[in-house]
Length: 342
Image (cartoon, rainbow, N blue to C red; front, side, top):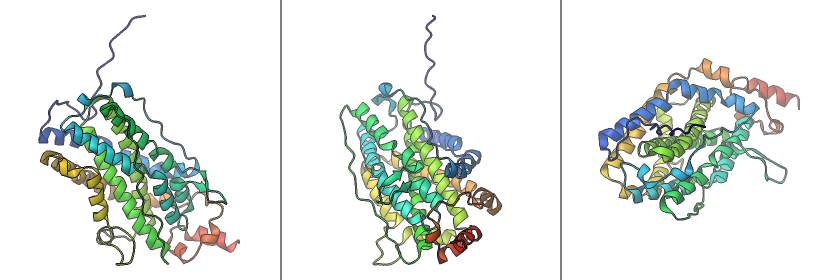
């Protein structure tokens, strides 16, 4: 048997730099965004959602050489700052069960299939009977980040399970879901931008880890975004901005996006970042949104209706939940027929 040298590890962001400056990092970020956020790839992820309603299957990760991860694979950022970002990401990703169950509760009255995809199915005792696909995929993130931290730092770390804002219903479930859904999409967009940025600051096997995290976040963000555009076709950017920035009222326990963003940046040790690090992350957020808006403009009503309008299969137990809210749902006819058969 002839032994050959393994081919060099291809950098997913393009040209490698040992000590990149601002424009070199920006070029790497641009290359990654243009590679992973094409309209074709985003449409593919959205078109996958109805298939997952019927036959949910987790995406397998590619093989990662965990043992080869080392400090030299971190570029363009101070190692200690990089490690603090990892800690913040770990703590943010950790309470995935709370995230999924909160979203499931907002969804179950409006769209049981999406509630199943996100939060699974509960038994009569209120315990998880089947884990949702979103949770199955997202729950891999915290262990992966912990493994990376331990490989780089040489120390074990435990995630801090912070308290997540829970289900806070009002007398308008449709509006509740709209508000919650916007924050969920915004969170996925933030994670997508962060992992793109981290990929631009890493090489080798370390970059491979962030690629897998990124692919998951793009997948989930795309599904939530496109589904939301279909479910709430009459929304406007003015309304979106108003809801994301402001709370509903003084006594409504719902944090604004600005508070969420501030908390996230504190977790990521933003104050310790260099000006270049801050500027390149802001660039990542802006250019990512630019690409997403181009995709959003391609989501025609006919295209979305073809994907989601048939409602495929209504889960057992959804009929008793039907009320006035269903009148605003695109599947009103089918849902009404189910109710009339009760």
